[in-house]
Image (cartoon, rainbow, N blue to C red; front, side):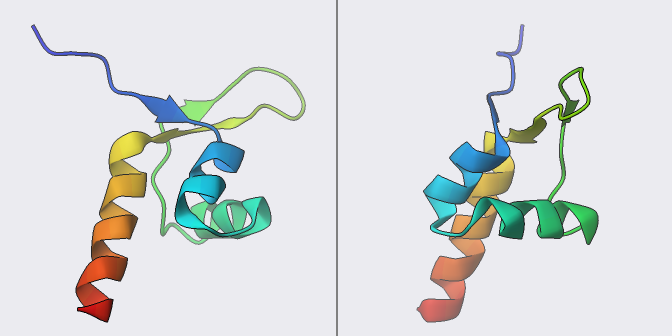
Length: 65
């Protein structure tokens, strides 16, 4: 049995990456960040896999190393 994937909101992902929430939204629109989906409602929050945030952090670390 696999464990469920942890999801973050765009604002949580932005905080973890040190960028603005609008940057995360732009990255999603540009296809640079994968999402699990959106919550219901007119302004439904994006659900971003924690693995995506980890991937971006790892890429940044590789570039600065």
